[in-house]
Image (cartoon, rainbow, N blue to C red; front, top):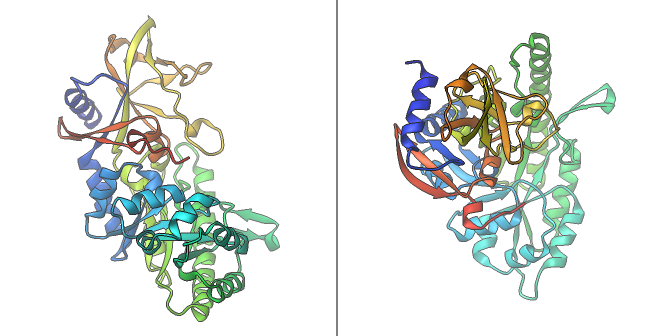
Length: 401
């Protein structure tokens, strides 16, 4: 029996007593992906990106592995929740304007010691100071973010995510001086997320010219960023010699970023679940670990099976690559005029004729942790058994965005 057929049979047996819709994590695949990230990091610690997992049980599982240390969170409310849950090292990857949570952070020594916030503008420091409650005297740990985008033609062409306004090393040094001069703040880190390298596949099926262009762009971007990041780290360390960490990377660029001497830790998360957007990389091959199943509820005609729900698009620029993909059984595709629907999804293909009412169709989400916003629990599968059911963030009543 071919591997996809074996996987489908395993998942069907494991979840036979569970009604779909449901979501699973294949623990063997999850653990293998974690081990591969550690291998690619080459001895540098990995900070797990919580937005790509959104399940505390799985965050705990990966943090228990040698090679992982700390969490990269996506909101301040989540950061405080994780810190109260026992995570002692949380780096907030995005600036926040949550005044109520900043009041909590600056009033609680335990939270202030565990959480580092992201800053790329003096106005963010002003907001934090304004949010301090009467007893909010705790020192705030601060990380600065370097813009990693590749600038061409004197900056007229920009390739990369629009994140921090701090592109030049001297800009980071200037803000670093503002932080260290300001009471109530301590500069402890620098982050640079190269999304145009780590988050863009360079081996797009059927697109050889595009794939080559992406590889050429990424090679140029890596060279430029490695030099600029090293210069930025030197500039910031001149201001704050006790800088604790320099964070970089992402699933698609782990080994390249780890090779930079200036980088002390690597961020990664999507590589644990390996959603469909991470199928097209030359740098690594992961195993799909997170899937969701929808039940067949209609058979409208030959070559058509309709499942319940399915309209679970991922964030980002709208396009077909943001849609879930029918995974098992193989050979199913969307009806072009309907696509994945809010309450039902017709699927076309020869495989549809083998499906009966009540059968499960297995899908892969386009991105990683966003799947957990649709389900309250994840069924953890070993071989052909469900060994545990664990809540997602949503299942714990936590919807941070």
